[in-house]
Amino acid sequence: MRRFLFFALVGLAAPAHAQGAPPRAPTGGERAALVAGALAGAAVALPTGPFLIVGAGVGTYAASALLDLDPTVGGVLIDTAVGAGVAVAVGGGTLWLVTEAGGADPDLSASIGSVFVGLAAGSAAVGAVHGARLAWLRADAVGVAPTALAVPGGGPSPGLSFSVSL
Image (cartoon, rainbow, N blue to C red):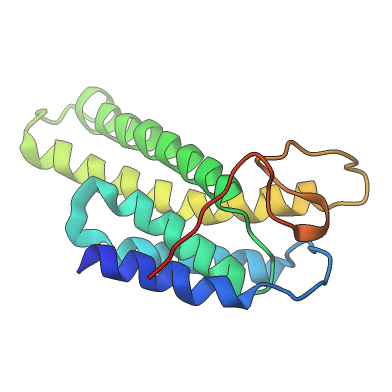
């Protein structure tokens, strides 16, 4: 069922690419929609546990494609990796604050609570990083971007490809 949801989101997002239009930077409202898409994807993937960061990446990709921001799979993978790093840092920081600074016992509930705080922050970070990265890459001052992050003109990346066939 989880694989079906993943491929359904990717399959629905694929036809939403802009036809021949150059990629554009997201507006402030669209960046908020990207964060909401990441959180929605994480909520759908919540039963998978720590893999909900992957769900946040899929939700971000789907939201970005529905907003006609012409996302690349490689770029969203980078954003998802950054979100995973944020999740680890926030979760570890939360556990440290609760146990060391707060003086609470390092029991299982403190550990689980800090993991969920980290995963929520990491999921939101996936959408926020995606919006910020697209805004930076598509700004007028940026001339060249690595191929894995963005392809000028919105075409397929020559170095990275992703296809789903049913």
